[in-house]
Image (cartoon, rainbow, N blue to C red; front, side):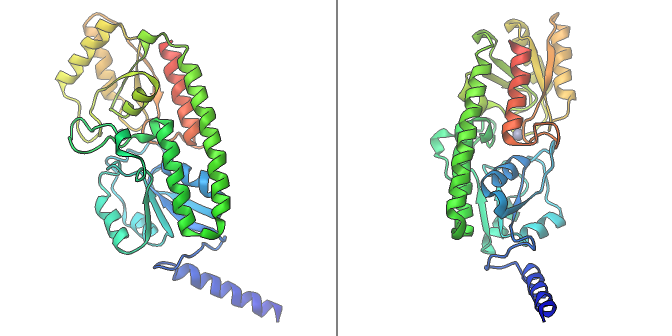
Length: 309
Ligand SMILES: [Zn+2]
């Protein structure tokens, strides 16, 4: 009798999984909500707040460029079968707008982590007036706002766990406070004149605003546009004039553009180091210590400070 009951339970549980799309919230067979997140950074945020109640599947791995990422048929299926889809927004996932709209119109829960941040905090997208720079995670203060939005979304998904999600949020906000202290303390090691950050694409403008760096990117805010030769020589001239010690490669942008800049500086009789690789639009690989948002930010800060101090 007991065995039959267990069998019936297993059959009905798998039925929930198979028919789990649509309006009714389903759980995976491990009892967790299925959440699909676009980037590694967004996935980490959902894991941090959702904790043991969510099973987060990220679409893009470490080092993948979200500006150019096109969802595969498998990705679309994953999103259709999820209980909730979470993305950055502000057109970071530049090729996925139609998919998000479709998901939204199917009445599935879909959430942009940037949606509740007041517009006054956003930086204009220089090359595309009227839209905003999507790289909000580089200002910890804004990412705290994103964390609150994720907590609200999860509570909407299942009110029963509201106090757990709130507790996770509080704990995580505390960790972000500590991260901010770490950032400010390390940056104080760099003389103020040396606080210039030159990277492959303009991912770091929020970082510059929040932590007092002059930021120059070689490629514009999206990686979709290539750097022209005049951009390279202008930036090279700036580096020579300001005697900048180091420029930086990014994990999700090909190395060659920043190497071309280094060569152009050399041609003007000055030596600039490549200060290391920064994580721009994703976390690091598992096992590097930079597989979380906090680990990624600390790794970046250490790379920047060690090269410019
Ligand atoms: Zn980017």
